[in-house]
Length: 381
Picture 1 (cartoon, rainbow, N blue to C red):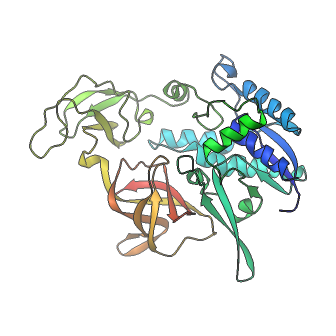
Picture 2: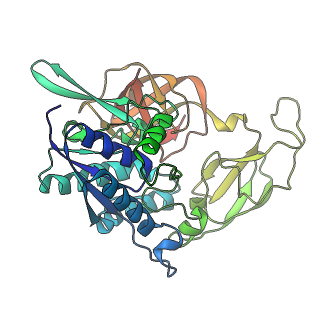
Picture 3: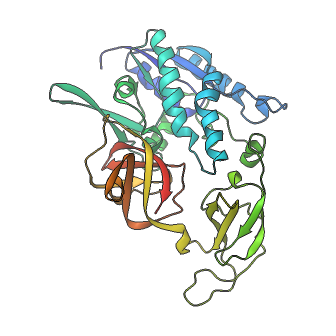
């Protein structure tokens, strides 16, 4: 690649640090941007949870070692308007959104990309474990989003809403590396954050107690917790605070049920959230990981975004309905009502029933290593 001006999103973590170093080694003009996208409003000071200031110190130290400039940019207003407001709306409606998907589409590859272009960037780069492949077809340049080579770290699921225009301007330098190689490179280079723990919190908000955090923003409407036989087991705090498949924090750990013929579970089988009945404000729980209520052979999704700009033809593909799951073989096609296709809605029919398909989460399609795009799960079938 011809030397270019590349703006790198430096988060303070090791992945973006090695990303910047690799590009500098390739002879590019590299500029670092630290994105501050959350401003604390809990009265305790942001650093009690988010540690944004510490991350910026780490990012600045990395920039100093590599020998690049770094700029601190505040996108907090964009984040609240484009990501956090939608995040809360979805939770309030009883769904379970994935803020990292929206954050990538609206902040990292929109607000950040726009800012980088104003700085004269030719391209942007991030420390995501994914790859971009450029192809020529019918005289046009097309871009494919590929999985990262490290199957344990692949992040294409979170990037499936990226467009051709965004991919044309984006580099993922560590997408062809395994995490162990990234750590090794960071140590060899002498980067100050070589051993820094990976972040696992909500995109930009950080690793704060999640229930306590949501409690400040969502309304409470307690209601009954019922099992699959209509027995009342307790009271929930509000349907927004629970997600399908949830096992912890139900407050019914002492309730037991004896297995009966044809019924899964038993005395010591854990309880799981299986359904949220919004009209009745009722939380349904079942006992046993393989309870039929937790397994679904199909789903419908909408609000779709396709990397190629249009949906693939109906075909046998694979999909992920959660980030931490193996690809599941499925048939893909339009969602139908009375034999008529629903505009903008799609259906996946899985080879094997899938566990705890959750409205609000993303269903992402793949053709081998190529991420085709996807959308937001509307319902399990």
